[in-house]
Length: 136
Length: 282
Image: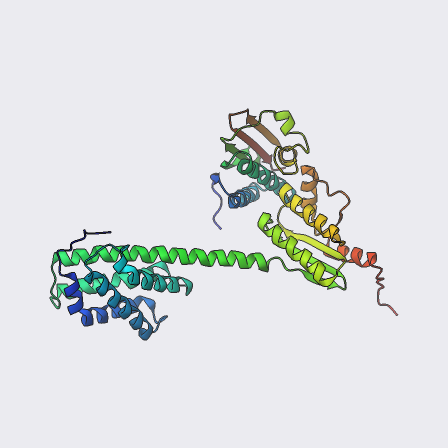
């Protein structure tokens, strides 16, 4: 396998794309030398976010990047869509609350699985979620 | 793809007159890149038939591959391309079957073995390009069909329900769990429960790379369905990093029994059904 580039953009329009995002994130996480637990956490978090982009955002784009800062390395993944946006962020981040048919843990769970989490959204503005996981 | 309804060339006459020489040279050229993977006799039969259909279509006067007179040519060519795709030929090896006819015609015209000028050659060239495209299209479509079939086979293949003990079934899950696969797993498991009368089912997720909320939700639904049918369901094969991730996500498996390994789950199922296991000393 060729080593992953420093940045990769993946369109999310179908279920298979969620799998592609997951595979890309996994290979970046391995490159960033994340532990197996952290790899799994990041992969799971991005899997949730990619599925949110698809299900609630009506599709969008994922960008996966390799980061270095001093001696540590990490992976940043951001998910952008032009969907309806999230009108009430606090409510959306409440465990067990869902506007769809899921478990209501995707967004809030993803936040707990990563080191940095930024959510940029508003009703009618689309949604951008960015997460970062650093090696220890 | 078309050159007007009224052809002003003698392509049909030319092809008919040169049938013998053209097909012979065509078969010769087309056979070379196939490296004996198709016998000359097979190729000869295919190409002679295709040539005959092509001449008949050209004689109709139309140069539009989509028009009625070309129906037989299209059918023959599609069959041929589909067969090639399924037999593992490359796209080039498949398309070469069409394009070598062009080469054969050019050669024969060049050596003045058959009568023909620029008009005929051009008309024929355009027609063969269209045929070549059709070949590619059919080839790609056939390949996609193969991939779809394989995906479906894989779906069946990767979800076996095995009997590990009297009254105990196990489903080892491998890879990515999506809605389609979970549906297959659930159906197979529930059917097997009815068929075997088993009272315990173990879903082993050792081979599942990541458990996210969708996978968890699918698992929970399967367990609930099995319970409704009176069977006790255990989830096993939860590895340390998966366990930590599940906790991080905040998923609760509630009162569903989970075990670290398939062996633990089996022991649990056996104990529940009253089987005692003793180490075989003495």
